Length: 122
Image (tube, rainbow, N blue to C red):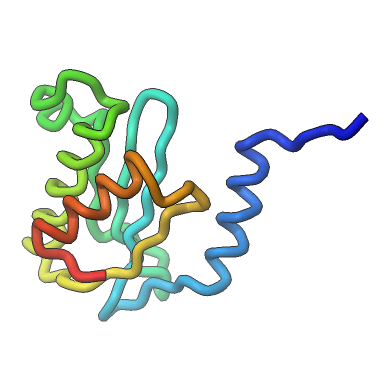
């Protein structure tokens, strides 16, 4: 029988492969996205020193209060606008988008499109 690898293992391997090419610098940090079954997380990271410059997630009270559900496309697009506004307040205008091995559709695409509309360039 042919055994099939789990989606999580495939995603993690893809993420490791992607990270060899993506590096966040001080001028252009990395926008990293993680999606679980119930929440979404976004961070803007400077990889040269290993610091998280800006973060947002659907676990935060003020973000959670605005959302009906925390794991749908609407929540992802709202999180994208929040992370973009916070990054622009810190003076970050351009980022490198790190989808963390997730397929670029649905929630990940909604977050990226909302961040672009809010003013982030990538």
